[in-house]
Image (cartoon, rainbow, N blue to C red; front, side, top):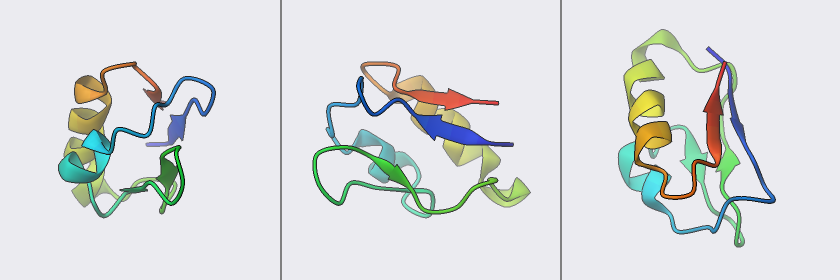
Length: 61
């Protein structure tokens, strides 16, 4: 599984960090991905973060 963050859409709210702290970080005002591709044991967290993103900036392939 591969995850991308649409940087022009992300608001940096940090909700993805609370859902998947091993995958996402927000070093400035936009979320960044720490690990890609996503390991199988973190896939559910990535899906949850994508579903919870208020601006739908997280895309899963």
